[in-house]
Length: 195
Image (cartoon, rainbow, N blue to C red; front, side):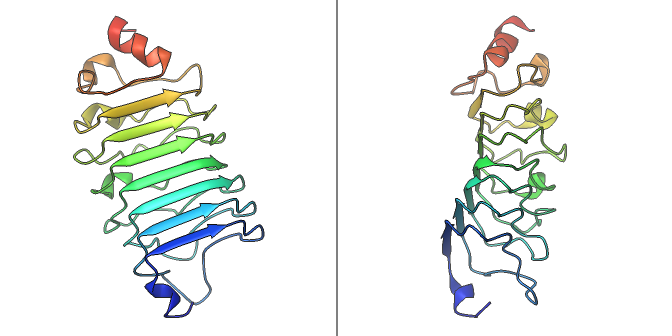
């Protein structure tokens, strides 16, 4: 990858139907200035960073319409400064390990990721994380247990997911009076009825 390209702060890749990965032979890292990465309609993209390090300067990751995408990376680096993750219409099965290391992470939004089942139990950051949105992920069956310790959470939307979805115990949720919205009918009943 040329040194000029590595000075990019924002990178949008759309309709590259043959793109399979962002990994680059001979390069351990990709764009050391990158802050926004948006990828749309790359139908053969199966992984983002397999042989390449996750860009530690990346703040916003947006992926849409990549049905073959199964994973982003193996792990998030402790130094990563990711603030938001938005993934729509992808085949992602899980998010990388190490979400709890992302101290700047504020939002995760997952929409129509039909293969997503659950999160790694490594946890989520507890001080900056404010929004968790999951919609149309039919196999998604459990919120992370660590939700009980996230005192900063202000917005929780869970919609069109597994009918058997499980939530953290009601008495362990410090957030019920803070939340702007809780949209899964089972969760609302869980909060108010203690089910």
